[in-house]
Length: 163
Image 1 (cartoon, rainbow, N blue to C red):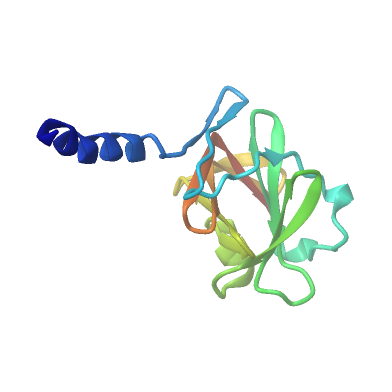
Image 2: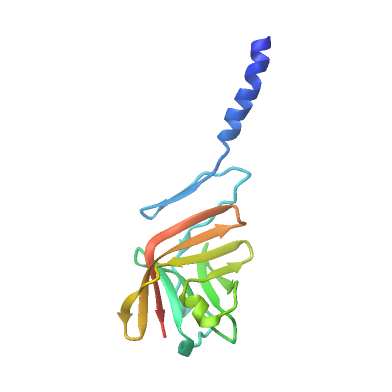
């Protein structure tokens, strides 16, 4: 009887370790393992400027993050905002707002943007290359967080900004 009682805490500890959750993005295949404690993040879908109901101020520049041939984030300045971005989750466009002042400069260096439960952060290289006429391209990754609990990193990809 004493041995059974001593084993009970070890069994409970082992079972609670099985409750961890992760979302893994590998070669365009996403695997979700769900538990009650961790927010599960939907997979980002391709977003198009044609589907966005907002005109960016082209004179201040527009940036986009692309990975594996798909545009996953479009960001820029519009209507006097400090920055606005768009992603697509579950077939719906999600508007993101900039978290810091700075307008186009803050977007170009790699913004952190938020919308409700989601936070998107671009981490780009310091030095970029010319991507085209009046455009600069940087190697980058995009991190998508939900509720500050779970995150998925997309990349390597490209953060391209036009002026």
